[in-house]
Length: 406
Image (cartoon, rainbow, N blue to C red; front, top):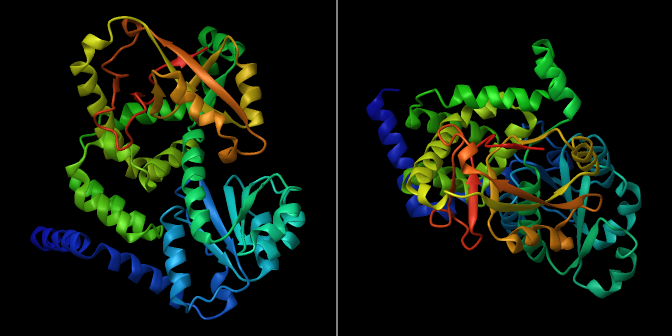
């Protein structure tokens, strides 16, 4: 396709998004829902995971031909890109038991939940269960027996409200980190041959950052590549079109903080060292880094003295133990790091237990930043309140690997 045709195609896509975004969502949901006519249609198809979580919907009364089902599926997929519907209990249990390294949220009817929860409650990857029934009071008793069952809701719509908050918390807590004990650092310093024994997530993400910041990306070409990839992953069309058509109308910081698939995709790619996705997002990583660098230069008068920032989040029991074991060593955040100058903001992320994983541990990181000891050309940070999509958090955003703390 020549450039003029490509330009016309892109313009047409953006025009369609602006004029008829809702139709795009409805068409996609209808295609997915009506393309199958049997229970086999609900068997999950292999697909690359682009978020830190997936959603399983078990309901023996699902009818993909109904408009109500299509609307509910659309709502759910605007929260979780991967939604796997099931009408067969046995198939659902098999699916849940075969998932590795992926946080799962389950939606089911209360009557089905009462039967299936004892069978699946101890599955490590299953994080939360949301049950719904029009008569919520009749199920209150058994729900209290199972810690992963959050509550009984009167509709899936009310569950969607909770899921939005839960998935936001999940993304916030899933930031990739490396824990390096003091012993390993000492050995690496004394013997360079031991550098390859440091955590791969730490070494590879540093190398990746150094490389990606040196590449002069063609944003238009890179965006088209990312958009094509997103469509292959079944990301909702309305979100893809919004990103493609309005990307330059907002800043990289705004897109990073906007509740949509982009933040979650970047977070997971860096955590899993998914190089294909990391490269596809390379142009965005570089743009975000450069904006922080520019903002830091503009705000330099505000960073003359040492100051303290806070970050509240959950850690798995294993990560918490790794944190304790690395005392005197290094803790590295292998992603852009959101912090706040207000301790109360950090506390907000750990105080509401209704969104927390049952086995996780809440922590508050208190970090003292000494600007005179930071190379702001390679590790910039900035106050982003005026540029973020979420206001009121007095947020300071650090670029990847801005600092390691011991």
